[in-house]
Structure formats: structure tokens, C-alpha cells
Length: 295
Image (cartoon, rainbow, N blue to C red; front, side):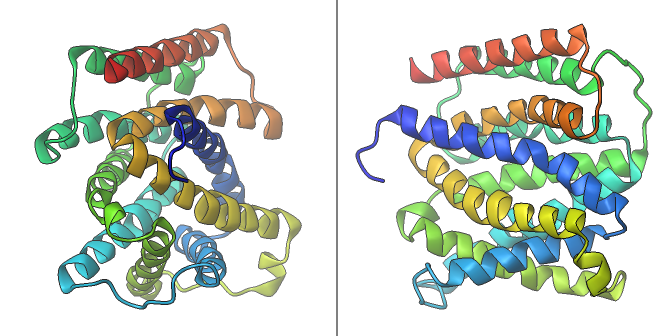
């Protein structure tokens, strides 16, 4: 994918967000069908790992121990711990709280990029655009029902997920210039699977075939494993390589909007005028962020 115009990578980023925005609903369906957060994560990453093995370079280890350790951290921050914190938060807390707090990831990533990545530029307009988009996220998430019911553990897990994703984004920089994106993604899947194993001591892997074979369960697991994980992780890592850590991550603000639309289609939830105002603010915020980043 060399010598592509920048807009190509922006399109890839938007595609990933369109898919990931629907995963809240997909995960909620699996939780409602009795699947535990750890089992949801394990099956989606296992499917992705099996498939990517056939298209990835067959080298087993990184070029040195430092890089291998970085891959381990990527598997934790973008894999096991991220999805376990987010999925568990969805199970015990209100979805609107989770969606709002997880969407602090772009703001955290912007801050971390400025602190740790000297090559990343942060303009005042970028910060303003991020804040405008975050305000839009808040309006979309609450969808006209301004009732914030705090669940301390759920809120803590949601913020932890946002922090983990920010660290994942920062850690990826540098490795993407020395290894192929497919190899990096395969290593992330591998270490995500390895580091989730200890959690089975608390909540064993669900292997009930009757449960897993249910159309709603099998279909959503296939979607999460092959599309949301395999395809989108590869494409997202490509966008981070070509656009940097800040610009693609700002598209995460679209997540609640996509979740709102998919919930309206799948679950019959109503979209209010307040949510539409929020959608407009998200678009305005992303436009401002891009304008000042490109200038």
C-alpha cells in the first residue's frame, strides 16, 4: 500500500470505526445470550489468529528481546486487558457510561503522543476539535436522556480501557517501520490469547456447543473475529503507520454515533434530536482536528 494518497488511509480508518461502532451491540447480544467477557474475547481472537497465520510471515519471534517484549505489551494493551475491561464494563455498567468514558481514548492518546512521541505535533485547533467532538459524543451517548448513573467499578474499567488503547497506539509506533503490519497483528493476537489464559481460573472457557452454535452467538462471534478483529486490526495498524497516532484515533469519536445507529436498527432504540446535534458536533470536531493537523 505504498504511495497511496492520504485520503486512502482516512477511508480505511473510517471503515474500521464503522465496524467497531457496531461491536458494542454485537458484544451486548453475546453477553445477553450468556457468554462471558473472557470467552467472547478468546473466541474472537482465536479465529483471527488461526486465519492470519496462513497469510503472515512464518517467522516466530521478533528480531530482539526488546521488540518481543513490545509485542507482548501490544497484546495486553490492545488485546486481552483492553477487551476484558471493556466487555466487563458493558456487563456491569450502563452502556452510555461505558461508551462515553471509552471515547476519552483520543484525548488521552493526543496527550501521550505529545509526551512520548516527539514527532507528533499538537496544535491548539486539534485540542479544540477534540473537545468539540467529545461534547458531541456526550450528546450522542445520552441520546436525550441525561441520566448519569455511576457504577464506580464499571467507570474505572471503562477509563482503564481508554488508557490501554492509548498506550497501544503509542507502543505501535516504531515497530511498524521494522516489521510488516500483518506480522505485528499476528503477534498481537498471539499475546492477547496467551495473556488471557490466567483469567480462565476465575471464569472458565465456555465450550457448550449448543450455546456456541446458536445463530445469534455464532454469527456475532464470526463478525467479531474475522471482521472486527482480523480485518480491522490490520487496516487500523496500517492507518497508524501512515497517518500517525493522533489523526486516526480521533475517528474513535464516531464510535458512539455508529453504535447509536446500529442499536436503532438492531434493537429498535430511538434516535432523538439531541443525538443529531451531537452527531453534527462530532463531524465539526473531526473537521477541525483534521484541518489543524493538516495545516
